Image (cartoon, rainbow, N blue to C red; front, side):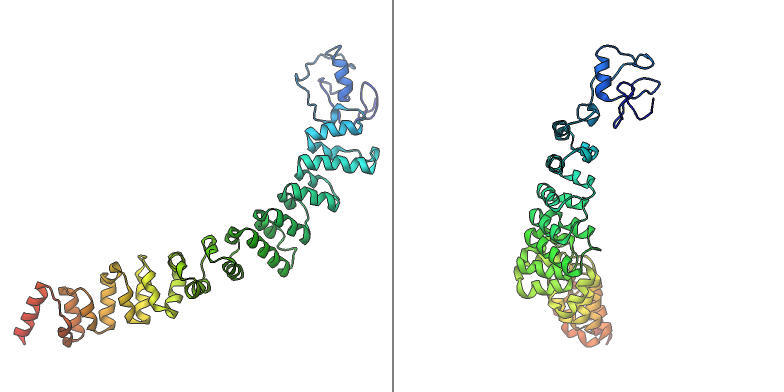
Length: 338
C-alpha cells in the first residue's frame, strides 16, 4: 500500500489524518465513518480515542470536495482557500470562492500568487490596510488612502523605495488633506507649509516646529504665537532671536543661555524679559557688564549690583536712584573717603 493513499479506500490522500500509533493515514471522511462502528485502526486494529470535537472548518473532512463543500469550509475558515484544487474547478467557481474568502477575511488575498486587479481593489475596499500585504501600485495606494487616510503613513513608509518622489509627494498631500493629524508622521518643511495653508490650527499636530514655521506663524497667525513658541527647541530660539529680538518676551523657560543670547543681540531686549529672568543674578551681571553699569537704574539696586556698576564706571552713581539702606550707607562712605 502506498504511503500517499488512504488505508481505507486506497485513493490518493490530499489531507491525511492518522489516529493510530502506527501512523496509518486516512481521509477524514473515511475514518469518521469507520469510527461510528469501531474505535480501532482498520488496518492494524490498534485502539485509539479520536478528539471529542472534530474540526469541521477544514477541507480534510472531504475526499472529493464539491464547490458547495468549498464554500461551507471557506465561509467558516477563509484560510482554507490556500488548499483549493484549481484543476477541478471552473474559472468562475474559482473566482467566486476567492471572492467568498476575501469577503470574510480581506488579508487572505496575500495567499494568492496572482490576484486580479478587481479582487485586489475589493480587498482594499473592505480593509484598506490589506494593501500592506500586496505589491501595490500607485493607483491602489491612492485608492486605499482615499478610503482610510490613517493608513497613509504605513503605505508611504513601505513603498518609499518603489514610488518616485513626485508620487510620494502626491500621496502625502492626499494623506494630510483627508486627515490633518497625519502631519505628525511627516517631518519635512514641505508638509508643514502645506498643512498650515490648509488650516493654521494644524500646527497642533506638528511633531516639530521649525524656524520657517515660526516666521510664518508670527507674520500671519498671531493668535498662535504663544503656542508655537512654547514648543520650539533651543536652536530654533537662538536663530529666531537674531531676526526678531523682542520675541524673548514669549520665553518662559529656565535656560538663561537663551536670555543671554537675546541680550547679546540687543541689550534693549532686557525690557521684554519676564520678572524671573530680569531678577536673575546671571542676567543682571551680564546686563551691567555689557552696559558698563548704566543699566543699574533698571535692576534691583542692592549692594552687590551697585558695587559692580561702580566698579565698571564710577559715574554710574548718578543712576542709583532707588538704593537700598545698605547702598545708601555705602555711598555715604564713598563720599566721605573721597
